[in-house]
Image (cartoon, rainbow, N blue to C red):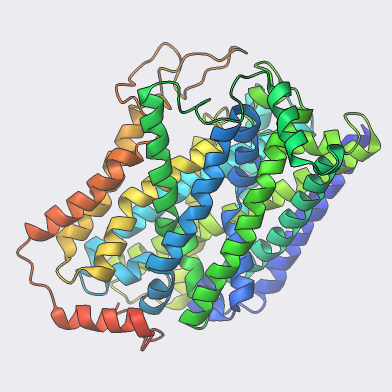
Length: 543
């Protein structure tokens, strides 16, 4: 009982800290520039920390370490994909997007096209990607609180209540604090997460006399799986799994440059140089963190039971990091174990709250700025009305995310985020890249690439083994979303990126070349100059 009191106290302390930051930030928030872009007042280093806070989600902290603990080498491929993706974001979009947009991704797309259809498409895509990403965070929150409060993960009512509670908190952050509050929450969370992870990594390595070889050897022998440290345990079984791995890799590497909640972070800095600097800081912070996931994942494999019916396996790896913290602190029942479990779980919870707030802010901003103001009110909405609509949209998106997260609670969260990356790379990236680099690109091309990439990606997920047809695991839990009696999985891959991403690029090209819409060379030249130099970026974006 004392353990639970300690855990609950630390949890409430973290939540209290983030709520305090949000309320404080709300006092200096006035107008849409503050609310949507933090008044463009953050330095490159601060924004780099915030991007790290946004990017090191529950999927990174809980999902990847769990994937490594269960699948060894193949699990680490998530870390590689997530990190390499930043090079694409840095080289292709960071600086140019900062220079040529204002608050949302649609600002950049709609500048030289028909405003209403393009803004509607971009906002739709933003909301769908954000909801996929939100699912993963909610599932992580459910797993964590179930572990800490000793709730049976099959207790649907209790888990649903936890997920709903997280949803209510995230709506509060967005409606009260806006981008300023959310950014500060992400900065604090990034510092907490790096410090907490570093502590567990040091304690794990200390168990093996700081000998990596010994750690890997213990992980391989304790896992009981042949070839644990070699490629192929998860993705080398047959041709389908190899293609699935390729698909996953493409989605991870290209997805970051199309993630709406990462793209809007480039608008919170005063200059394009700061945008570039913030990405460099983010790469450094995130790179170190993904090295930590190696020690966390293989440490969990070496020190915990990862058998088919273990707590690590039945949580799909989502509880590997918290359980490892308990183990290196002294084991279950010890004071040290309880303290470390509580600290790491509180940090993981802060991680979830910060990422969720960023996602909801991005998608609700897009609804208010792109659909409500630009499409419905034709650019005539006041700043107060736009902010009020953002708050309504945040509540609506929160309800949808809660409703979808409850049936998805048995899936690995790194895997769920990989699906969000596939949707982002299929729907958003082709339109962004074409718009920045192809003079002839037009409205039809943008609409076909966004709706075509989005529609094909979601359709392939619906007909994949993720939704139906996977059967039961060793503990008797259903591995798909739908009941085992339903099987509509005619598409064999779990990640659709290898099909839907090229299709998004192809449809963008096809829509453009078959359209008779005249393109404005003058507008493209102006966009190009602005994207490369930043000239006129502040007052840009025609409504």
